Image (tube, rainbow, N blue to C red; front, top):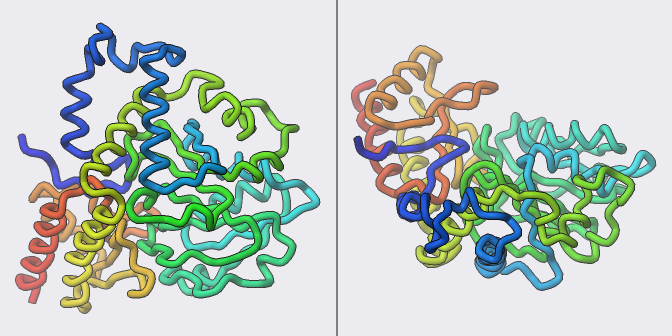
Length: 360
């Protein structure tokens, strides 16, 4: 059986080279007679994997020395609560820029710990756009500003990040490592690994040292960023196999030419799909405004639910996996994370054109 054209939104495609490497090392990692899954997280062998993953991430993303790189568990959803627990209080406020469902969930969690001020410009536009400028009223007096860099459900993406004197925090779960980022624009970046970094199970947090020192310490130990930073993310047993696979994925990104090459390839893939949407706008109704189109998740609808079902059934029969839109919005979604080959995007674009011609 051949490899599927995997357009799942997450967990998503992993590089075939990484899977083969992990397969070869699964039972005996570097002559230890053990799998990585069996290694003690306190062993020198595992600690070398841990350091390698941190170092590769720093190199690729250009993380400055005054930032800490943490490997945590609980996914980005835990960060929705962990962030305000560390940096928000009942008498303080945080600003949340709503650009989709995940930013709404993050704001909802923050309300448990303090006041939340919403920038709802994109929501008012049906989540088709990204704000050109932040809402000054929402930012007034805020302890931090939270954005979601890419919106998997609606298919929109920040292509230029906002500039603000207020600490800026970004959930980059679905587009981290897909293009270059100026880390110094942010006080904190967090991301679940299961889109571009590796398998589910590990979450990356990149936090500025000076902001780390300001975190609340009157919360449960496991939810304090400072505790994990002090222990180098080894306070308790980390998701060792997920971190090992992440290190292999980061090595693969280096071998592809780094983030510049990865970004170019991602733009090529999304461009193939968007070109068909633009060619047949009466059949494929793209959700995102052109200025906000995501390179990671292309979302669109057909004229009717019945036609969408027919289109999805034909796609599935041809081996295209994960094209059905999120259950909350329906329609279609093609996720084009780093490990999705250009060939898969090209074949899907060809299928879309063929479907359009036959539908005339």
